[in-house]
Length: 179
Image (cartoon, rainbow, N blue to C red; front, side, top):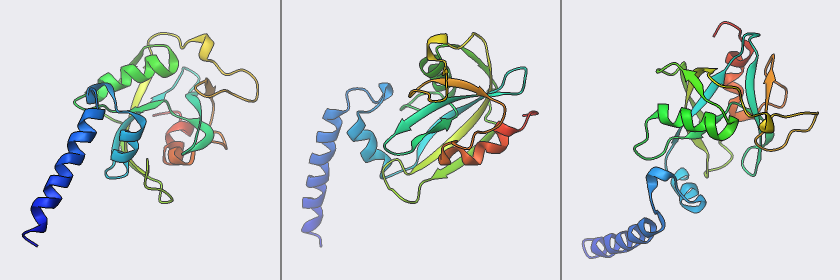
């Protein structure tokens, strides 16, 4: 066993160097392949934005991807290396909604979201933040008609039937009007 250990360490060190070369700047995010690799080894921490209007409606965005399929979800994003959750909230609001939000500085709740049917992108620690609009969401990103496109937003009185399963634990916050 003592002789195998240095070989394993050398192999791992070479693999680490190869991976590090692929990561240009972890603070800016990871490539899809590296992110999928990391997400198969450890939980990923993300923020989700609970945005309510004066009518107690919740702002949801449409998502359709290979991991979660099509459905509505709370706007959110993965926290980057050495990034403050508040910075990610601001970037999600701007990137997914084209607006700015006001937010509580502490999460409303923390949830462990586990997809038992897969290892890649299979475990998230989700920080749910209560937010309100500071500016109006981009009208070019608004969903019109019955079939939304990926990334479009819409106000919802209650959680829709086609809420992504990964956000089912947030249904109570979406349906509630006193959060």
